Length: 518
Ligand code: FAD
Image (cartoon, rainbow, N blue to C red; front, side, top):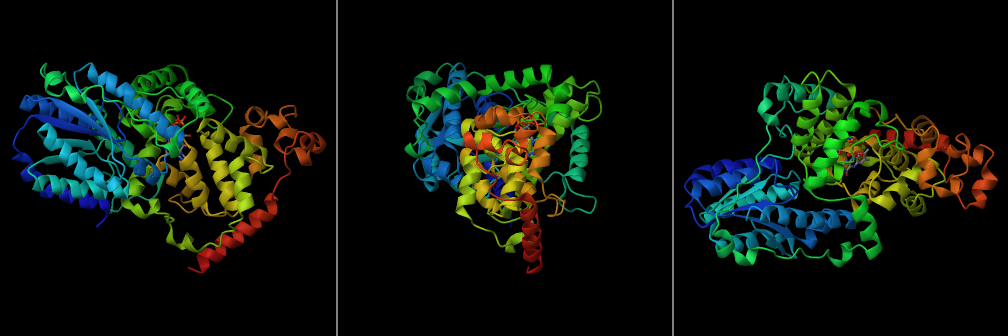
């Protein structure tokens, strides 16, 4: 069975036991990638349960350094999460709800520690939102059963997507493997079930006795990042200014984007030098805002009051947020995509080049392809890269350099502030033509044409590649072939490490041979 089936059957089989769980002294909500107290389904359910039983709600977050490693969390992402916990702790404290944070070094010890804590607190009810990565689904399936055996209930609910994975199927009962028909079905489903866009209330204030009963759980310090994920003081200063954290910041960003920029999204979203997109990905990835709130807010501004029709910018933006749902749907149905396997098995036999020098040049932004270098330097500098550029550098790595896409996928996870297994794996599948995208492998981006089309004046390149700052808008895309070689050389900008036309041919052969040998 797929991991999601393990969890759903564990939930179904223990449903009866859950109904008969004895009320005790507290109800617990376990925060994971849902670091907000508004519009959070499991948190709202746990608060309702606590109210029904007349007992306090305790919130908990487990920091696991091993988990950070397993999820390839970048230091900037870990820092963002830890800062966010502080905001969340303050918000909850205003409701007399403690957010207890504890470090558990080994990931496998988390379930047993949670059970111990629940016993210590006298809690028989645990709630959490579902995460769709394989390990999490398996762990939660086992926990549901273990807790049931211990006379406790564990409710794990769908929350992270607008439409939960598994809700949509083709007319013949199959799973969609192509975005466009899936998206039509997604829209129809939401329009037919408008309560999917109802937002959940924040939790109710805890009874007054909570602070006395659970004094020790209040004001528990948020731990520092483990050494392997720690930022330097200078980096901290930079990233804290660049990426303000927490759900209030997320909401403000969403509202400002919807007021000022969503209307122009359709036209501007592909221009990396424009501030044309929302930059909400780190918030969606950390759960400081829900996809539901995003879609609901944008929809409410559409004059059609629908997800489609009306304003071009709004409908395009909603369709992008839907991509996030789509890649979770893919992950749940084809879990091997997050286990280093291509969606299309016939793409497993491509002979990659494994040229470490090329890989280092790609990582460090010194390939001699200005748009690629600008993009990689943006990532290395601020932990974020514009979507158009993510597509360009992914295609460049897999097709021009013929490097194994998994190396790029991993590098992204290790450096992005918004690193997300499902979306990253989906994006790399697209860039390297090994994913759900129906486009054939012989669609190969030409980095020069991409550069001229999406950064026509070279403003994005100028920002991130200072060596090329004084080039004209023609020279900047290809200095060595446009008469600016001596100036580029003088500034230390490298010549192109490969020749696109020849690489294109090499990639076409390698992909074809790989597929045919399957
Ligand atoms: P906006 O354009 O404002 O879009 C709003 C939200 O919709 C985003 O925040 C994001 O949550 C979602 N979204 C938009 N486009 C996509 C998409 N193509 N796929 C999935 N969700 C999307 N996104 C991540 O969140 N984490 C990743 O690790 C990630 N890795 C990627 C790797 C590659 C190779 C590619 C091509 C794309 C990747 N994306 C990833 C998708 C996309 O690039 C980012 O979500 C987007 O650039 C974030 O900027 P934004 O918040 O301004 O997006």
